[in-house]
Length: 178
Image (spheres, one colour):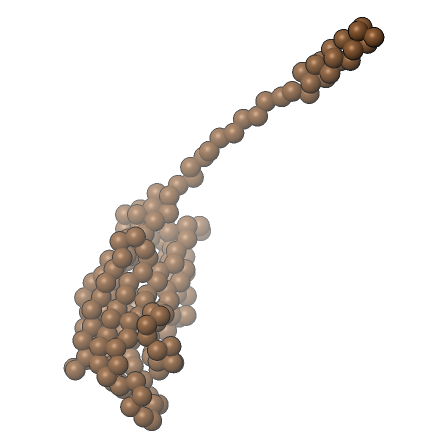
């Protein structure tokens, strides 16, 4: 009986040794993607005031606007700098309202973007122009923005006049791959 148990034990050790193997694991860093978004100049129509804040740890800029009115315009610019180890391209720029602002106001804003001050286009047209435009290592691009409140004077009441609002501009990017 002892011989049988010893035989089974030796067969188990032999089988375990024969099935053994090794595993290699590694981590490969293919690069880092990062941008720095810096605020620029801001202007507002008469009677309105505006202030811009950039956040060092995000791709967002916040614009606080006071005393809006129909036809009131805010213009500002910001710079997107490529801090990556590879080329990048902007794939989206979007404007949203912060949680404190009345979401109904958003329907009465017209937003335009441009790489040249004064030549504003809708975000769809602007982003189509930026498609396949590389922002190289440590290079930057300045983007101009114009926001017009109720440009067609569609609001029949004074519902949103003299209100304060905060916009958030977010820049989304990806690796340039052409």
